[in-house]
Image (cartoon, rainbow, N blue to C red):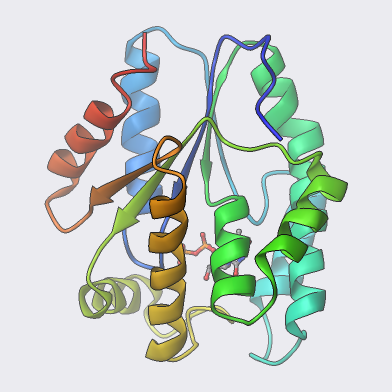
Length: 214
Ligand code: TYD
């Protein structure tokens, strides 16, 4: 259930709802870490390998009810399995820092918290698919829902994916689920106020990693 112990780098995930700025922050963090001379792997979910990117298209395109929540959760777990085996574990084993835009906590929040599956079932699929690999640190970017929705709408310009298109109640349940995971695991999670400008948010992120960065 934990990251490999022989690694030099660590496994860091960025989580949160749509429009909170995860991708921008991941790029800023990666560039800061490279400036420290660290080897960094930047990746994302669903995706990160050719196979997982193919599954991403199945998950994100099409009608909202294309999959039932159980099929959806298993597709996310399958995509993650390939990603962990081909990118995340090899990266960690080579000593790199792996930065991932969304990971298991997104499946917990979207497919359990907001879609009604049991968290323990999501974690069981994670054990089967990815040997339960967990991040060393998870940065939860938090933003009031209305601001996040405005930002996501401006970014997506009418082309929202199957999840972005869901109603405010769904997104509010996603946010509440993320908050509850952060409260339950305060050592792994750092909650970041994502309402400031990107540079200030990035500074908060660096501060929250000060205990693990060299
Ligand atoms: P992404 O393209 O990263 O969207 P955004 O930039 O809006 O954060 O993620 C795609 C969508 O997939 C996003 O709406 C969240 C959803 N998702 C899940 O429902 N479960 C998961 O396990 C993951 C990784 C993503």
